[in-house]
Length: 151
Image (cartoon, rainbow, N blue to C red; front, side):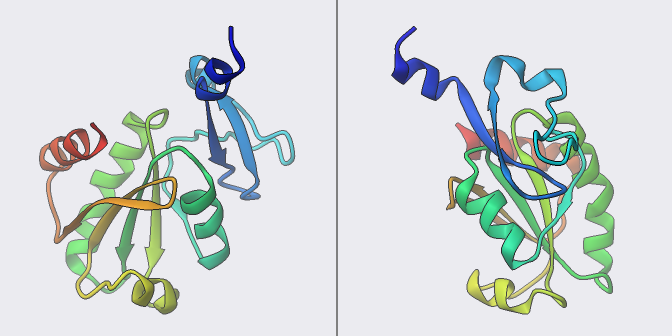
């Protein structure tokens, strides 16, 4: 196997606990890899809360796509989206990371991405925005949106 093939056969994933980058071979992603530093499960299938520092690790430096939910605790539609995002995180744990940014606590991040309404979902790959969706959507609509955006 060539060096180029080996490089493309793995993804960089930020650990949900310590936020260090972990190289995960794509063929072993379903085997519940753990972080070598803190021993946390790297692809846990749970949404990850992000602040500015963790955002850089998960969205800008990791190569696994990240679906970021910009939300606030007082927002009714945001609370309605939470179970849909929880389920998506579990079902697509090896395909993408689901992350949450509380816009009340992380106003600078919300401003950086021009968040004008919540919930707003932004799908990133290697730090680049692939797609954006504002407003609450159901699980089937979210799944179709992700499938289109990831192809």
